[in-house]
Amino acid sequence: MKKILTLFIGLLLIGATAQAQDGLFSFGIKGGIGASNYDLSGPVTGWSTEGTASWHVGGMFRTNIPVLPIYAQVEALYSRVGGTITLQGQGSDDGYVNRFDVPIVVGLKFGLLGISGRVFGGAVAQSNFPEDADDLDYNNFTWGWQAGIGADIKKLTVDVKYESGSELISQQLNTPSIKTTQWILSVGYFFGG
Image 1 (cartoon, rainbow, N blue to C red):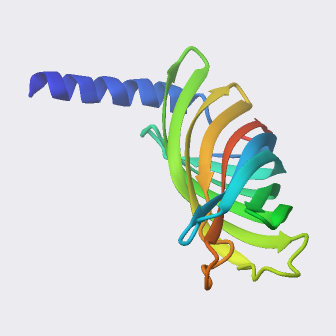
Image 2 (image 1 turned 120 degrees about the vertical axis):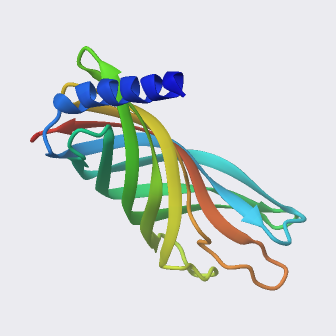
């Protein structure tokens, strides 16, 4: 029990050291690139997908919990995701979705000597604006999730995360449901804090 208590106190002190470098509130800008794809479920026989590059740009707001190594962050991002969907015998279609994303994550910080490592996860609200919705019935608002790791060096922040959206297109007769997934690399800069 003493070892567990000592380990817990040590982690809190390391986290408090990481938090001491940060203000209570911080805001900034961020942008990045990713690898997005469509994930199919349901009747997928004859259907296949291929990924493509994605990107995002926007702002972020972070609040640090005093003394504890915990933070909450909200972002407002304009994103472009997509992929190629192929139906055997009928060809393929490149589909892109422009959307407004609002990730809401909670994370744990740890670090020393001006560098803070982070692990985080949470929900992301997505408002979709498909470029070509002639034949498909897109859900204009969906919820997804994301989780990742990151590092803060002074006011610079870097994240690597995985994101999965909810159904972009609901399953219909003989067609699969479709959702977007992506790996994301983003870089940001905090102005305040």
